[in-house]
Image 1 (cartoon, rainbow, N blue to C red):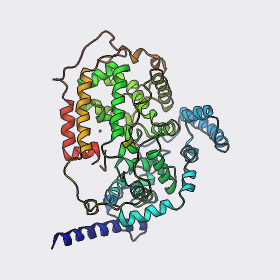
Image 2 (image 1 turned 45 degrees about the horizontal axis):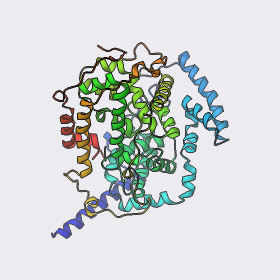
Image 3 (image 1 turned 90 degrees about the vertical axis):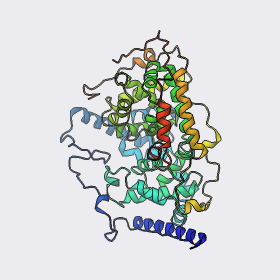
Image 4 (image 1 turned 180 degrees about the vertical axis):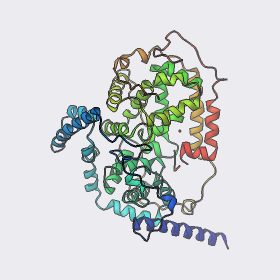
Length: 485
């Protein structure tokens, strides 16, 4: 077989595989659509499903306590106010701000997100575009195999996505494939599955497509720069996050440096998917609401809020693994603060950062936004068509590794700021803490008062995070975990 014949055979195999995957999603829940038993988790609905459709390992309370009943009563009252406000859109900005920060009632979140992202206008301005992108994806998408794999593991603990080829699984598959054609410069990145999945919990398929496009391409949100090769926005945000830490959370910043905790290890999912699966889902929805209202500066402020609220416990943890496990796993299971208290703290942090002129990171560069015209079809090159994985690093990926190393070296020698966050206005917020509060491309003896007088600087010899992180980035499985390549 000649090289040309072999290449044609590989292209034909990729086309047949793509068509077979699309056909299975087209069949959906049809009995003729054969699904392996391992792909469908068992259904255990009764007493185990929360209001958002997520299943839990232990039984939920059979009765509502007085606190929950009070919350439900407040939400019902807010329902009425929101419905009135949505019917008189747009409302005064101060009124909208106040109500979003108090929380969008779950029953009106679908309508509210439509309004905040102006989804209906996008649909009207682009009539027929979504279906055309979906048709092109079925013929030409090179991302179908990876999207299929990611759909199969996205939100499988939620009833909407639990059954293989369910309506929402099919919608997620369609949205991601269509968008990989619509924004051909970006294609598909693993984190996009989570973002689109959250949108689909509240929006219809085409609405979710245009909402995803707004979050990715609108400069207010700019998620294109998070998902594009090289992750320029991730680098810019982590640099600014470190800058904030070094200025207003000096003691915790020094603690993280001492124990080799690079922000890249804990903040990737915070920034990529706006805290989903890193804090309780109800709280992440509140952050999403505010993110849609006020844009990407909310993400940086929420990251600082999480570290501020939990700084005492983090200072008690004495090794990298324990700190990362606390931030990535434990806070998702038990955040330790009510959603209202957390959002109140977020508001205070946002105000303080604004006062210090730290609320907005340095301006984005042009590579954080699409350079190609959206919706213009571009046929993939031969390597992508046959699905051949590359083993070498691109210049953009090499730059990510270099940035990690240089940032850690800079953190270790950074001049200490005279501003102490622990004694700032943010510390005046009164929070109720429960007694048990502490009980990247296609795929990271505590005290409440900082020591002001210390001029201690960590030795670079003790700071080997750059070696460990660089090794992770150069190890293929871990590279996929961190960078999604």
